[in-house]
Image (tube, rainbow, N blue to C red; front, top):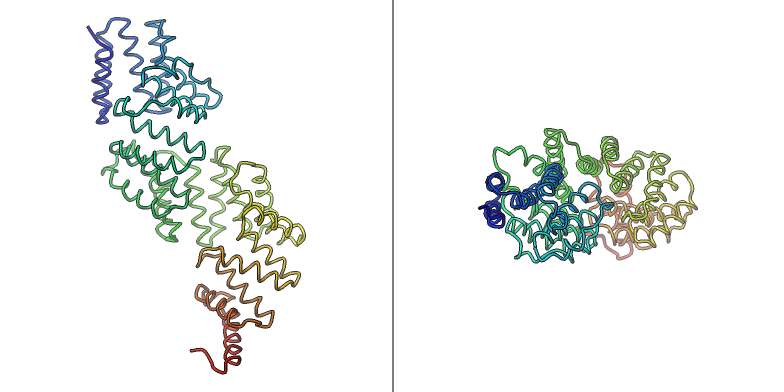
Length: 467
């Protein structure tokens, strides 16, 4: 006589070492020999196994649930059946799905509560998912890292990024093989968003050796994701050559699976923009916009707007940026407003540009707003105000960044227009800017002139020249 609970335990032992084939064989062999009520329960365990394949397992889940209730109609009220049905519904309909019935959410069985938590997370009810989730030790080993992953996803939805980082780390610790790499990659993606670049790079370095050679086809897109994240890390480190090679490898791996993602196109465009190639970046941002889901469109539109602005197409840029302003939940609306101000400045609308830049500054877009305000102040010949704005840019921007260099250049130039009231400060700004300005740049000669004049004035004031 077949005991479904014992059979499930045997299947879980196989799954604890990621042996899916053995688990299927154990369950299917028992299913073929079992009497009708036991077969119905085994059908539910097979549905639980199919759920591990994510969306690609949905059709098998649907067939298994139909089979289970056909074999035993009373299962329609069973907590595991209800939880698995809710998970399938949430995979299909997302936030429009019905939440799991209370019998599933409050079941004594940890497996039922696990699938109920999955359903709630997929249905974008993260708080409920966290409340329903069972303690990890009550679950089979193969579900413990998955539980941590679902909990991390729920914490992310709630904006609890630090908790999510820790949970992805726990998931990676509990997972095996490629799943460990995937969890580390989820953690690194979040670390990159939080600006913890060095930590993200260290996590990616641990994940890379887990990809086998030759690479199994089913792992190709996971490796593409690794290269995509590595490209972002290298871009943040200003290693643009290696970042470009990494994102191109990500695109190659995706293409080998007939995939083309929004994220790869967007990051490729960002790398080219960082390299000062907005014209080459433009078609990539357009591809990203075409591929983007609704929640990603503002990011692609913003990048597209900035690229058009870099190409001195302020009318086209403003059209894209205005579309982003309509997305109230976009986290960089202040920066978008500063970019709109830059568009209006270039179109000669100084009053509108100043108002928009002041709003952007008040909302926290300090660097781009200050650059616009500096430009407007210069056009009005308000040199003291212009200098204040550029000095703010220098204080806030990362040393050596494009904005920091611009701030140094403009501060030196404004002081020159003022007649070098503080030649030592003018000298310092010009010197800092020259260290990051190519000899072929139009600014190079201007900055050298400022440096020489400031040095002369300093020497005259002190009775000696600088060493």
